[in-house]
Length: 187
Image 1 (cartoon, rainbow, N blue to C red):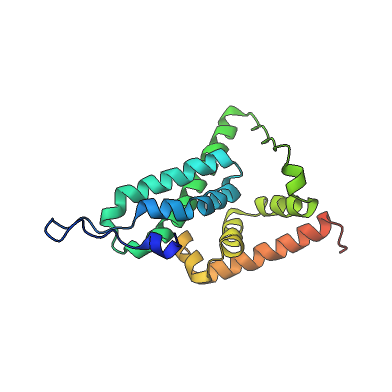
Image 2 (tube, one colour):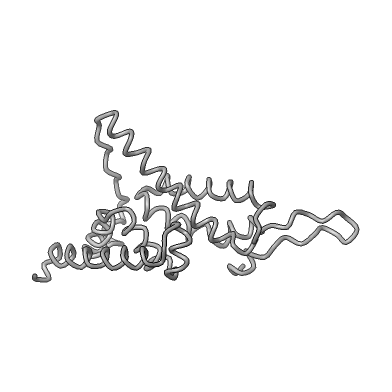
């Protein structure tokens, strides 16, 4: 099933029946975009289990709102925005828990094949992205991992296109500097 098929509205059950609420086909969206959205959330929250919860919550919210969406074709954008906002909430809750419990969160343990799959450069790049300020990190993930345009990123994050450009520029400059230093590429 293609992404476009997943965005089509659900047709009425029959011509004689009262029309069903027009909304996105949530099941088709789930099948077509679940993995992509989990990967997006994982980049944001750095934890697969939390990322899966975030995506599940986003789909539940879409299902609840599906009949009232003004534009069923905007369902994927709604999901992306929900995933970003729910990821922010997860990070805020973690930060609050750390502050109040005064206990450092244990580092996630990697699977046995993790080191085989990711080279040193990839791990360094991911770590550098995770250290960026929130807006820069979100903009770069949505731009370079999700492939969204500046306008789509602005809509998803609720900021101006100029703020997207600025955050991307600053984030890339910081990444270049960090990776040059970390990977020993000179000064």
